Length: 234
Image 1 (cartoon, rainbow, N blue to C red):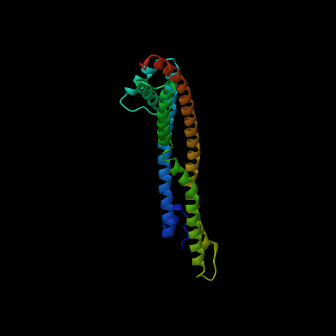
Image 2 (spheres, rainbow, N blue to C red):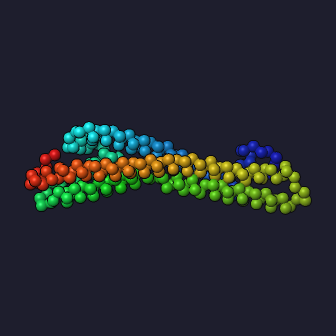
Image 3 (cartoon, one colour):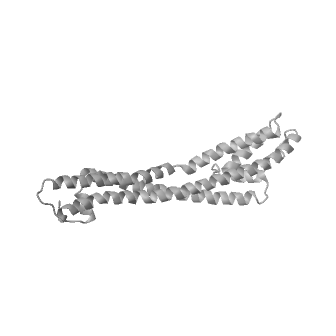
């Protein structure tokens, strides 16, 4: 073991096991940052899209006009607009069928909104589990590298008659790099997971609230449609 304590030298002179641990943690760190940046864009778009849709919806515009606006863009609507589109599309279809009560029509629209909301939440929660896994396991992987490096250091010292600090320091420093790398990979992942999980939870509450309020509006229109012998009055 040489006395060069530079970071690169310590990594290059580390054992294969410690180097493998460092490489694994580096890959985990890069993957977590890729997820963090991508998820940041997705959630920012979801929040802004929901804000924009709510502003348009509660401005008192015609439901059919709103429906046509969000379905003529060429891409399937997402976020809160996707929940509205699924519910209103089901509502329009059911009001054209004869023999259904207002309650049955609204229940059908609510089922469609729940399915759309579940798909949307699954999209927003995608990769969060990976962040949680990286954040929870990286410190232990780094600790494994540290224990292995220290074990090798003390095993090598067993072959010498007298140990000095200069002999021990490189091995200990090499081992502690693994712990530092584990924390480097884990801390951003844990912070991002907690932050994004909170945002996803808030969006879910917003979707639930909108679905309930929209169901109340559809209830009134359903009674009008049933009283008009199933003719779509929207």
